[in-house]
Image 1 (cartoon, rainbow, N blue to C red):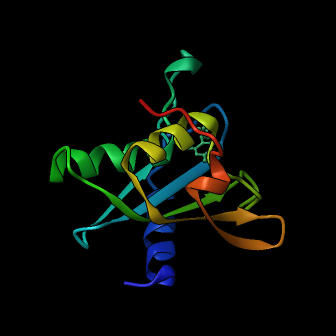
Image 2 (image 1 turned 135 degrees about the vertical axis):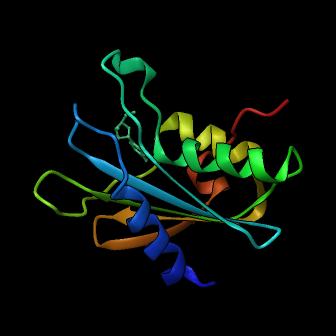
Length: 132
Ligand code: THU
């Protein structure tokens, strides 16, 4: 399972997006430390604040399957707008905190940047992040 495989699964997941309000489809594929893959898509709601991002959908599936010790090895976020194009889109702040909860220092996060896919780490995505 390499980055390309993960991207393929993230793109497959975005096809399932429920996004009638933004028309913006997002898919996330995560690889856990155990070597398992889980995917998720964004699920919107007419009460906009209840909408959930693809990353949080995928991570919730992983915890439900592997339990509270689940750790993230890699996250790939893919998107497609109404015109069918992939646009620069990094994880939102809520998702960065959600990813941080299950990340390890080696966790890599990939998403669509200004010039194609970028790969980053939690220390870059959420510097001085809240921990307890
Ligand atoms: N959204 C994601 O699912 N992942 C991201 O990384 C950024 C934004 C979605 C798109 C839209 O459905 C909005 O967030 C709703 O919360």
